[in-house]
Amino acid sequence: MEILSSVPLHLLRHDSHCEKRICIIGAGVGGLAALKAITESTYFRSGKWSVIAYETRKKVGGIWLPAPPVVDTYNAPMTPLYDSLTTNLPHPIMAYTSYPFPPETPLFPSAHVVQTYLESYAAYFDLMSLIKFDTAVLDARWESTQWTVTLSDGGQFVYDHLIVANGHYHLPRIPEVPGLADWMKHGRASHSAWYRKPDFLGDKILVVGNGPSGQDIAAEMCTVSSVVVHAVTAPGAATNDAGNLIRRGRPIEFKADGRVVFDDGMTEDDIDHCILATGFHMHFPFLEGASMINKNIPPDFPPLLPGELFNSTYHVFPLAKHLFPLRAQYPISSIAFMGLIMMVAPFPLMEAQAHAIVRAFSDPSSLDPITEAVDIIAHADKIRRTGASTPLDIAKAWFRFDREDQWNYRDALYQFAQGMGSGTPLIKVTEWEKELYDLKEELRSRWEDLEKSGDSSEWLRDVGKNGVQDWVGLMYRVADYARTRKNLL
Image (cartoon, rainbow, N blue to C red; front, top):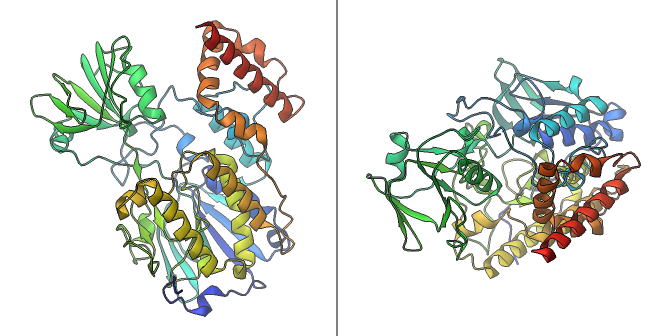
């Protein structure tokens, strides 16, 4: 059965013995992981490979590096990071497997602690000299046998490979809801990308979105507003009101008089301001100038996967191993997209992706396009079985992994990364990671209790000085504490 559009065979081959010049776009979590994996490879150490990362900002860190809510070239803040943000995962699960957080670090650290951790990671593994700061990639295009990259400082260079690690929490997604554009125009609605702290915006505030930021912002706005209406998309979530927080369903109309209509049939009057915690677009402007990527939703499939690369703004498609484009214009192993998968433990996942990228760059024949196409179709079939019926539905669900998917994916990447004398360790996801990841919400709630009571410092005393098992023991103790508290209520 033919499931791939025609891909010229010469685009699937690459001479693995020639020197490779590698360009990484971004020096956040993914870019740093890629730099480390490449610089530790035998190819880099023998001088066969060279690598440089271009970072738009003045430091490493990406989303974790704070910035005021001032718009950039794309009319969006550099980061959506708000003042009170803490991780929503315990850091022993969130951290790179090769570099733990320091001993006695709070279990759910603040953004400042994470930023310091990333700066320490870059310094410890001697990555800073390979990063060019204050330099944006304006254009990247495949020309014959190489990528031509144009930089914001006027430089233009050619590379054999690109690694795209520019993040996907930059360009705000504004829902298409009747009346909302008028609210935005008149300053009555704003995206959470501009939110930093709970300033008074009126007596009655609407927060749209039930992700981590939506939950945090709704809770914080309750401290300054008389009423906060929290709109969520989960069916049946329009109940369990508490204090000055009201939960409603998805908004379906914003009226000029301040009324908002919800899909559960309810209406809220006199809304003073709406904060949209509604996510972000996947955005690769440097690939759009020469049509290296198609900014549309891909056509439905099978029988054939499309012969070009699509960015639906919800997903990039089709990608082998969720990394490498299966398309005809440039070699499959010539470019990789990191960190697109959501609802996962991102640092160790991108670490695994980095090792897989080293394998594919060193041995392009390790990527079998037919096998990869079959895997893509199987993933689509799985999504369709959950109820996704249109190309848009599939695009929205493509990178939203369930609890088992991320673990299987990480293990598969490390398995793939073996071979060709790579020296990549065969790291497998541990049972404690799986168990404690599933308890992340209970752990975070109880840890907040310990911090409020002032007991967290005692719980943290000397934890981490004897390695990761210290942290595992602490997390299970907090989990036991959570169960005890629950039984008492």
